[in-house]
Amino acid sequence: MSKQQVDLIVHSASELVTVSGDSPKIGSELSNIGIIRNGAFAVNKGSFFAVGSTDNVLDKYESDNTISAKGRAVMPGFVDPHTHIVFGGDRSREFEIRLTGASYEEIMESGGGIVSSVKMTREATVEELKQSSTTRLRNMISHGTTSVEIKSGYGLDVETEVKMLKVAGTVAEECGVTYKRTFLGAHAIPDGTGRKEYINLVKGEMLDACQPHADYIDVFCDRGVFTNDETRGIISSANMPSRLHVDELADTGGAKLASELKAISADHLIQASDDGFKALAESGTVATFLPGTSFYLGKPFARARKAIESGCIVALATDRNPGSCTIESMQFIIGLACKFLKMTPKEAIVASTINSAYSLGISDRVGSIEIGKQADFIVLKDSSYRMIPYEFAQNHVESVYIKGKEITWDR
Image 1 (cartoon, one colour):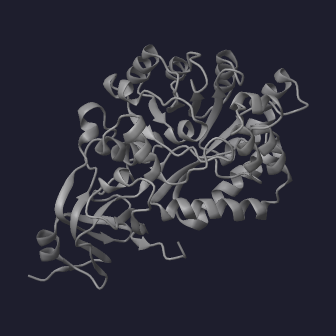
Image 2 (cartoon, one colour):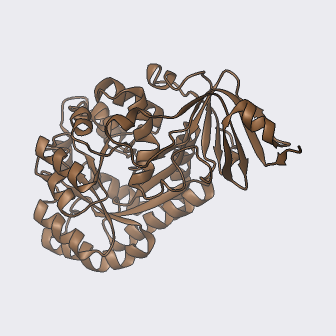
Image 3 (cartoon, one colour):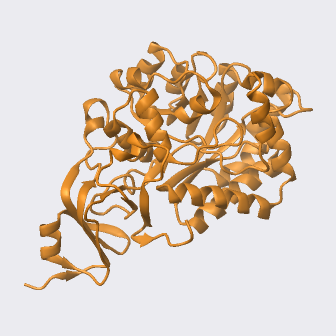
């Protein structure tokens, strides 16, 4: 019996971590990562064509491009559902000031924080933004990220917000990742603009200009930023799905508001209440945790265990941004989630792949190794996924594949 020719075969993986099954995974299913020992798969036309044991796959398929993953684990590429990678300049000076004891809120009140990034982003040319954003995204890819969400929010005027969203699309397309873009005009109130005036701008002209370039709308709903009522008004004015920054700085009832507004995702949740997690579980709004921000700012960590016990859909993200988290590696985030959010390695893997993909509405295409899905996967240098959180300050990725093609630029 002749074998079927395919574009690529990967075989003999010590652990083929498929994360297959229902999407999203909640409760006990968070620990179901679908490991196949001595696993293999065939790829054809950019998609997984067959998945199973090495003997089974090699008996039925052949390819001119065959890779032995003996002694190494293979798993889906990471999906990062909350990033701010398009911005101008850096805030290294602010980082130094914070180390002397200034809080994030104090820095914002003195003209630093988001407002300082706004100034540098407005001054940056399109080419400068493309270059810096490409560098960041390529580093994320080199650490295993193959799908990403990118927000605006450092323009706070119509022209720059549109510029950021366009750059995000261009950079993601050129890097080959699956991506979603989020309009975050309601990130802060810019200097020299009245509060009511700016909110009306966000709800009107800015939204009209940015909506064609965005998949979602977001609001930084928290103490000292945008109130629940302001957030409700902004989200209600937009005919598009929402993702919300909530309950990071204080429990303002943001998680419950996100549930009420039927937001796709509620992110941060450091100060979220038990009732907030219950509301998220009941509404199906994804609870997205960003432990890198707590780590970077020296703040408390969110209660991910409570969210899991409450029945929430749980996802993880880097929150890569210029001021409160410069981490670009989802591997590092998985390590933090295990150590500080009290998640198990299996739970963290699910939250970084299929559940994150679900939060972006792309779990039918990416986030797991299953027949028919896009062949985005990573080959680790190690024999087990457990090495990722165990040695979480290292890059465990040996090679990255998107749509069955290895990413070969200098990583």
